[in-house]
Amino acid sequence: MTGLGEIWSAAWPAVQALLYIILILVPLVLSVAYLTYAERKIIGYMQVRLGPNRVGYKGLLQPIADVVKLLMKEVIIPSGASRGLFILGPVLAIAPALAAWAVIPFAHGWVLANIDAGLLYVLAVTSIGVYGVVIAGWASNSKYAFLGALRSAAQIVSYEIAMGFALVGVLMAAQSLNLSQIVEGQAGGFWHWYVWPLFPLFLVYLVSGVAETNRAPFDVAEGESEIVAGFHVEYSGMAFAVFFLAEYANMILISALTTLMFLGGWLSPFPLLPDGMLWWLLKVAFVLFLFLWFRATFPRYRYDQIMRLGWKVFIPITLVWILVVGLVMQTPYAYLVH
Amino acid sequence: MNFQSALFYFFAAILLFAGLRVITARNPVHAALYLVLAFFSAAGLWMLLEAEFLAIVLVLVYVGAVMVLFLFVVMMLDINPDQLRQNFWRYLPVALPVALLIGVEMVLILGSRYFAATPPPTPLPAGYSNTKALGEVLYTQYVYAFEVAAVILLVAIVAAIALTMRRRKDSKYVDPARQVRVRKEDRLRVLKMKVSRYGDELHDHAHDGSQPGGDAASSSQER
Image (tube, rainbow over all chains, first blue to last red; front, top):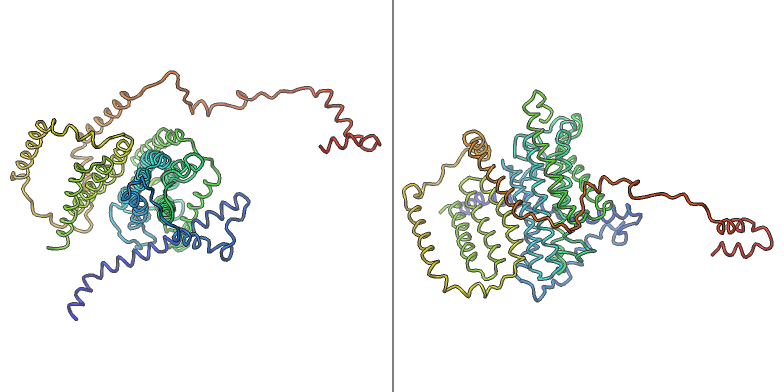
């Protein structure tokens, strides 16, 4: 019995970490499912339609029906495809989108791994996501898929730079790479949030986030009307669903990061009200609504315009604003950016 | 063998396997992907040495950016693997001495007392930030070396762009600045035209529907 107890006490941290991971991932996957429902409903109302309303009360069971349908379908591997990489593509797309949640704080002290270089970790892990798209496009051995992969690779690498620079401004203001400390640095009401002193960086980050997740109006990697469905044109069944899941998980991740770094995370907008996870959820939902709103509003960008926006507009804006923040920090008005 | 050394051998084995596959894989895309795996395992090893900043930057820069562009190029090349192997025996007399030289150099360096196996680093206190320490050293003690490296990189960027930039005279690229500056008056002219007489007549007929002869006019209006 003592031997068992020893093994148990040694294994307990690992078991605990696994339980926490499940506690994070299950609600995440559920919210991904209902984000698709919210998207169809919201865009439906924006286009004066009803959206899904047949499965369950007001269509609430629609995502479940979709998942069951995709699970039942056959996963077809094209005969000319590179088999191993074809399967690896969706796995590499979803894994970084989920792994990044390890350092996301949900409320004060509610974080799986409170590491010092949290911001760098998120940047590094999300930068791996592009491999899923590139490998899927190449392994499919199809022209449309390949074109989609090339477009996506160039686009994601370009916007990552603007995104990274926008985060440099945040870490200058917070003087920390730890996501919890970045949120704590914004304490004391909504006028202390970093969105105000770093407003240009906030805009750049938000728009780059839309581009990074290949969402409309930057969805040239899929481009239904140009290259059919881009990188995942050859995928079917659950393999396709995993790409779908990765896209929405990435959307939620970008919204969560925007909330943490610019909108005060779990902090309440007024010092009188208590802080808590509810605020964080509300803010994330708001940013996600922006994603859906963009999709219903803007037509798709032309490819050269996307590249121009990333390289010639966003990167100079971020560089100039980093300089401004750095200069202000040397003056007596430094409290403005802290 | 504790947990950390088990992890070390795990990452090291993957690293060696991936490195071997980089040079033996027949397909260049597979080789590039094995190189990505090698970078990843190396990052894991650095993490074990408590160099978390370097490990994360290795993933961020090499895996996230450099290798993506590498793959980008390799994927678009039309490489025939068999053709690459044709001249193997012809180049062997040149390649063999080079490989031997590299091997001897590595043995000499790794065998010297400066690079001999050092004891594992003593665990640092929990609050110690590797990133902060690196930043402080980089921007104080080594600031000139850092700036010189940055300038060299900038020169390389400018040179690469200058070498590859070609402006075709006949290409019809759009200038977004000019597009934005266009106003309605430059493109659109609103003309004030006199209403023609034929239209006037129709207009009159349409309005006297009360008269008995107005059937034709009302039916034309329906059309």
